[in-house]
Every structure is written in C-alpha cells, then in structure tokens.
Amino acid sequence: MNNKYKILLVEDDEHIRIMVGAMLESAGYQVIEAQTCATALSLASSHVPDLIVLDLGLPDADGMTLLQSVRERSLIPVIVLSARSDETDKVAALDQGANDYITKPFGAAEFLARVRSVLRFSRHSADEGRLAGGKFQLRDLTIEYDARRVFIGSREVHLTQTEYNIVALLSESSGKVMTYSAIIKAIWGYPDSGSVKKLQVNMANIRRKFGVSPGQNSYIINELGVGYRMDGE
Amino acid sequence: MGKWKLWLRDLILSSVILTVCFFTSVVLEIVFHIPEQISAAFAFAVFLISLLTDGYFFGLASALVSVLLVNYAFTFPYFALDFFIPSNFFSAIVMGVIALLTGALTTKVKHQEAMKAESQRERMRANLLRAISHDLRTPLTTIYGSSAALRENGDRLTPEQKDKMLLGIQEDAQWLVRMVENLLSITRIDSGNVRIDLVSTVLEELVDSVIVKFRKRYPNQPVHLELPEELVMIPMDAMLMEQVLMNLLENAVQHAAGMKNLILRVTAGEGQAVFEIQDDGCGIPEDRLSRIFSGYYDSKDRPEDARRNAGIGLSVCATIVRAHGGTIQAENLPSGGALFRFTLKTEEMTDEQ
Image (cartoon, rainbow over all chains, first blue to last red; front, top):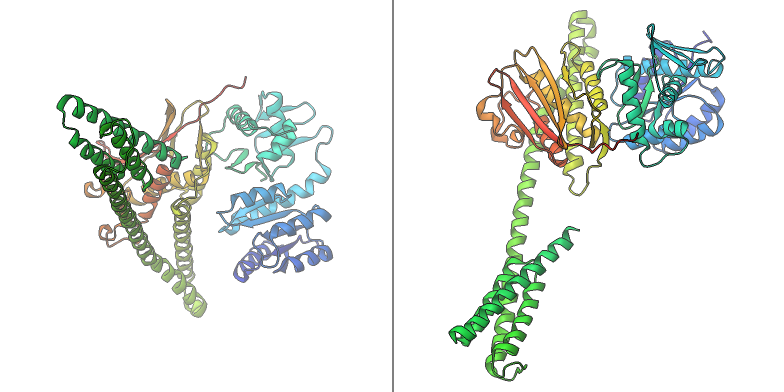
C-alpha cells in the first residue's frame, strides 16, 4: 500500500478540493490536502509528495509565491489549476517552474491524463534523459539522440539543425508544456523581437515534415499563446 | 492622438471659414460697395465656427480675430485699430455673444447625444442581463433538481435513470461554461477602454486548437478543413478568436437541422484572411438573417424556445470580429445550408532566409 504516489492538493474551495481529491483517490493516488499556502509549505517539507496540484488563487498568499518557495527547495513537479481568463498567469507559472497547467473547469479523464504524464516525466527525466544510444518513442515517432535522426514509422524525417534541436528539446521534456520563451532561450540562447515568429515558422515546417494536419492528434501539441508540448501519453 | 487630430481639424476648419469670409468681405467692399454687410458676414462666420468645432475655444478665438479684422481692415479708420467708435465696439460685443451662445448650445446638444447613446447601451446591457438570467434558470434547475434527487432518492432510481440524470447535469453544466466564456469575452471588449491585445498567431495553430476542442465536445461531427498551403500569420487575441470559430461551428451543430457536412474554409491573400463556416443544414430563416448578429439584445426578437438558443454566441462573434477591425456576414446558400463569413487582416510575412 505504501508505494502509492503521494499528491499534495492545495485548493481553498471546498467543493473543488473534494472533487479533485475524489478523482485522484479513485485513480489510486494518496492525497494530502491543504487549504492555505502556509499549511501547504509545511506539508510539502514533511511529507515530500510526488506531485503538487496547486490552485493559483489562494487566500493567504498568491499560489505563485508558493510555487517559488517550493522551487527554491525541490524539484517536486507542480500542476497548476487556473481559470480561463488569466493566460498571462499560466505563462508566468510555467516560467516559474510549474510543469503543467489545467484550465477550470475540467473533467476527470483530462485531469488524470495530465497527472500521469507529469509523474511519468519526473520519474524518467532523472535517469533516462540523454543516455548514450538513448531513444525517444512516441507512437510512430522515434528520435535517435545519438545519430540526431528522427523517424515517423520507418520513414526518416529530414529536419534542419534548428528543427531537430526543437524536437529533441520538447521530447526531453515530453508531457511538459514549454513556453515560447523557454524554448527560445534553450535553442537560440537569447530572445529578440522576432524570435517567437522564428520559432513559429520552424514549428510550421516541423509539422509539415511530420505530415500532420490541424486538429489531428499530433505529436507536438500546440498550446495557443503559451507554448508547445510533446505529447506525454 | 485622436484629441490632437480633432484639434487640428478644428483649426483648419476655422482658418478656412475665416479666409473665405475675408475674401467675401473684400469682394463686398470693392465690387459691391456695401461695407455695412461685412460685419454680418463675419458674424455668420463666427456662428459657423462655433457650431462646427468642439467646445468654446475656436468660436471665441475666431470672434476675436473677426473683431480685429473688421476693425482693422474694413471699418473707418482703415488699417488702424479703434475701439472707441460705437459701431465697432458694438460689433465686437455681438460676435462675442454669438460665439458664446452657439458654443454653449452645441456643447449641450453633443452632451445630450452622448447621454442618449449611453442610455441606449445601458438598455441593451439590461436586456442582455435579463435574457441571460432567464436562460440560466433552466440549466440550474436541472443541475439542482437532479443532484438533489440523486442524493435523496438515489436508492430508488434505476442505474439508467441515474446515468441519464448525471448526463443532464453534465450537459447543462457545459452549457453554463460556454455561456460564461461568452460573457467573459463580451465584458473584455465591452468594458470600454480595454483594448484587445493583438498577438501575431499562426493560422494553422489557431485552427488546430479550435478543432481539438471541438472534437472533444462533438466527437461525432467531423469538420472538413480547407486551409491555405502557405504560412499565414494573423494579429489577433487568439483566445477571443478561438471563441469566434468555436461559436460558429457550434452554432451549425445546434441550429443547422439535417446537416451532413460542416466545412471550415480559410483563404488568404491581399492582406486579409477570409474565414468561412459552411453547412448543408436547414439554413437561416429570412426574417432572422438581417438581425442574426444582434438578435439576442432585442428581447422582442427572441423566440420562445430560447433555451438552447445560445443566440448570444453570434453577437459575441460579431463583437469580437469588429473589435479586430474585420467584417462578418451570414447568408443562405442557393444549394441549401448557411454560410458564415468573416475577415481579418493578415500580417505581411518577411522572409528570413
């Protein structure tokens, strides 16, 4: 019984807390609940959860502050719950180190998929990463890191240097949303006025070369106005 | 910027009127030899300027200029200022009074017009609120009633009944979510001075995002896509534009009875992108066509079965598209079905090779 994932749920609204708690428990996770930032912080250090689910609008301190203090001490993955209207908060939370966000309202299937994907990412990234001879596999998509080659099925996809770097970067953090600015920093090192457009143009070329069309469940999921995510499932 | 432009316009207008008046006076003096009418001509000019410009400034300034001009150039002693001749003194007072009174009157009229427009907006908002509150009651009844029944009499309901009630709760909650999304969009634009943030967005990514969401809501309704081959960038508030496409697609699903094919087509060229949402359903009743984007605001126009008629969706579309500087139309196709079309300005692509 003790090998269950421990999830710290930080949410001040009772109904949402009950609902999310029930979703998680029915999926076999162990849930610890906190209503305020202060309790959340002490629970985070005493219980060392595997994942924190965090509502951004908490009564005693901004959820963002909690996120910051958690990040100062640990790499515990964090999923942020946010309302539709604050997309700037979403980007800020991701840049602050949150692993994923989910917009309220959400269903159980959608939410649990995010949880699984974030947990898998944090478990894998520690050891797998970029081992020699390392490979990434997502449905038909294969990336051979050593050879810097990408395949869809048995067809090799010929990417430019930059395109390959973007795909490799996203695959290394598969399941995690990477904001535009995080990708730009990793690929070009410095942001400038045209770099988001440069990234978008490269992504368009990657999509074309992958042969995916809009609305298809493609390998790279586009989070409009926020960034991109390599599908985690 | 707008204020500055208005000021410049008023300045040019005043100068033009005064110049015309000056030359008319010259003609009156030299050709017709009726200098006594010159004061009248200038009084008329002052009146016109006070009427056509904003506020008091230009009226009073032109009155002053006119008094000086008439005094200096057109009355005895010529080409000298003399305020001690009673007729000159009198004309100065008359022009000043004309400028003040006309200015006061036009300001008052303008103020009243603004108030009228404001009260019209206020009435529209009240209508909208009334209509929405009315629409909210139905899904809330289902949600409250069903959940209460499930808790209180859960053991006496068959699994099928329970499932049906839960589905009802879920569907009506989703309806509420959509309503709230629309209201959020409207308030974001309507709240006056909040300008929408235009961020250049890749058309393909916008469509992708919308279609993924649409499929989640309506897994059984395929959407046929026709998109341009090349990369198209459009400056927009992506979240609001997602809402427009979503509302139009949803509108087809809910109202185009008998629809088999749903098409989302985008063409781009000459600096604009044209979005078309086409269905082959029952079409739009002719009497509703002209007011389809504003119908919701007018309570008399609402049909009685307004429950599923989220008519607010289409007015939201129009509001958002217009806020982006685009146009939106709806028409019935000769082959049957309806077509919604809206345009947006595209961004010039600079090649970075």
